Length: 88
Image (cartoon, rainbow, N blue to C red; front, side):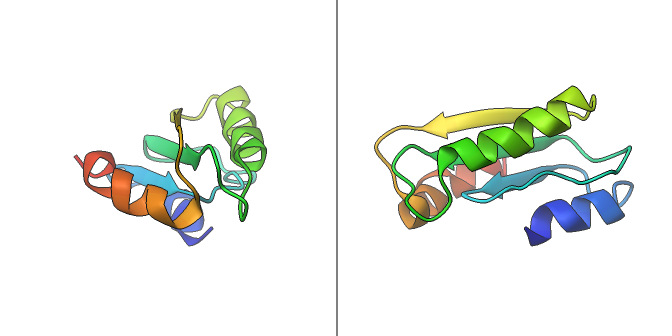
């Protein structure tokens, strides 16, 4: 989404990036800030497999990404549950 796009376009201006309940990857960029991808186990809008795919592509490209799966949460509630800890 927008967060990953901005991170890929301005890696020197963004210290770190958190993508909650949405991430398709960075495309063909060579540099991004450290990024945490957060997936909700029960997300019916953006399935966890889609986020894992984007994460794996970024990881395989050598980009600094981490993946976190949050059990028992859906798409909207995971943002509220994880936003504060993601921004620390």
